[in-house]
Length: 112
Length: 114
Image 1 (tube, each protein chain N blue to C red):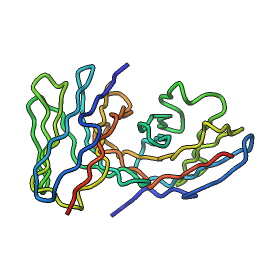
Image 2: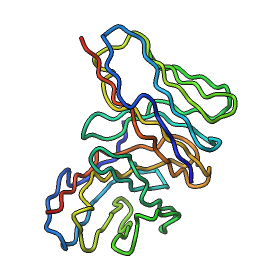
Image 3: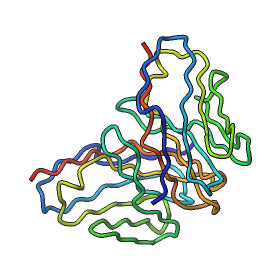
Image 4: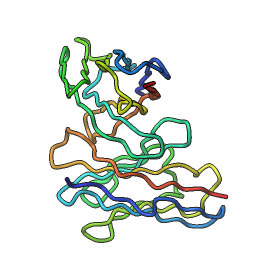
């Protein structure tokens, strides 16, 4: 079965600093999704990547999928307290039912 | 903006009791899902539902679990006889007409089994 490993598990940064979160899959990714979760709340969709080498940006967040489609990174530029939360990568491993398998999560804290 | 709504937000129940968690997916969506997240652990897939039947289920989704779409709007998850280990946050999600694209998640229902 497909496994997604995220690193780091947790991260504390000073406001204004850049940071990167990585997601590595044990199998080729048909689709890679990034979600954000605030503690005790639902998951908010950030971005979806499908093609090898693809890169997408939304506001200060950029996500990339490598050419081999087994690794993705999420980069936040000039972090703000509003970026704090748990970042989850999710993979559509089968491409059939859009069942997502989620990674272990990265807890981000941004210190003002 | 359309959203997935879940009720109750929090339910406390005694072990062995039946629990029904309710979800109202986005109205024109066709694929529905339940996920759960035990405190401090991963978000885990439970079941997907399409065209009024289960399309896929995980090992977690045993005979104690069932899903139903009793009318055109609600999507329910029933746990027949709750166990302590069923304590978790349960998330409902829905997907639009395309087979790829973002899942829209509800805010979750926290279940505490005593």
